[in-house]
Length: 361
Ligand code: UD1
Ligand code: UDP
Image 1 (spheres, rainbow, N blue to C red):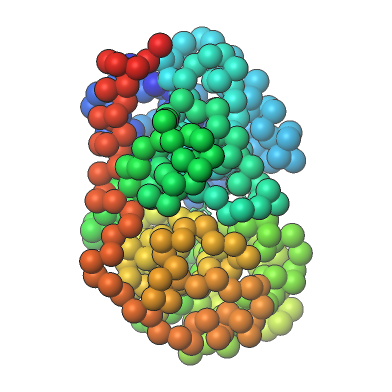
Image 2 (spheres, rainbow, N blue to C red):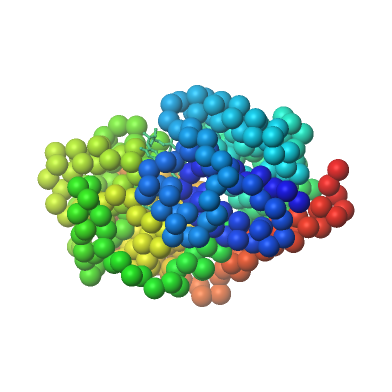
């Protein structure tokens, strides 16, 4: 089959690292990068470090409102699909690139394959939730990372197209986290190399819910600044100015602000951290894989599977709540593996081959 894969944002590059490697053994892939993330450390570094094939197209579309970004992607993707005439379009996750790719394809009657389908927060206030629900419902095949996500799709009447294959991010985690960590340092905002302290907390924070004003980030950083070891905060570019200003204004000297790091650095920073504080869907799972306790700063659960034995706890963007959640210890059941066996990409390929033989119309 000829499959057009659409990527655009950081977590999609990490998923595509596993996805494209498996897909290209059996199928012909056209890789389309929307350009949603474009800085070297938000995009190119992943292609370089993870050996992801060069995109066949980069649309260079980023920024603006959700509608502006999505609509520009929609028309550009449509013209490429008309030219390339793929048998199916594959999209990952829940970003604006996901929705634009799925919508462009379904309008051209090209089957859509959605990887990481079925996750639900239960609120349409989250832009990612809107993208997920829409994409799941217009896809021909929905691949879920967990049994819970599969169940949610069954509840929405999508069970006949849905498969639980495991989390493709876990494929990448297993594949790359065993590689040696050659550069145990981070890059400051000024471009200086900063050594990583022996003991540290690792933090990321970029969701719209926590970045619309200074208040949530100030609360989170106030909590981190009070801890018994420094916090390495790898800052998403949308938060760069705010993070710098808040730290300077409040004199938060126990926080090390760094540029975004590559994936190999990110998983090693997770593995070696005392604890993790994040609002990232992907990072909380990596903390779980690594057995490092996580506090997830959001009002909603993203991965219910991780919320066991205090391994991942919800906290409000409130310094006292975060400190209190960080103060409890976790319990790990070594036999509990809700994210599959690290072979989600191969399972997807095998289901695609059967579908091509039997069901594809
Ligand atoms: C997007 C995804 C989110 C994902 C996140 C991080 C949607 C709706 N959200 O949010 O699910 O968790 O990516 O992976 O798609 N910017 C840069 N350089 C870059 C990229 C972004 O400066 O390389 C800045 C721009 O000012 C941009 C802003 O960050 O306007 C926000 O980027 P955008 O892609 O719109 O949203 P994310 O917050 O990255
Ligand atoms: N990540 C990274 N560099 C960073 C921060 C995160 O490589 O500076 C990785 C992280 O290890 C995880 C993924 O990016 O695999 C999570 O993506 P992100 O937080 O951007 O999006 P989300 O998970 O919220 O969709």
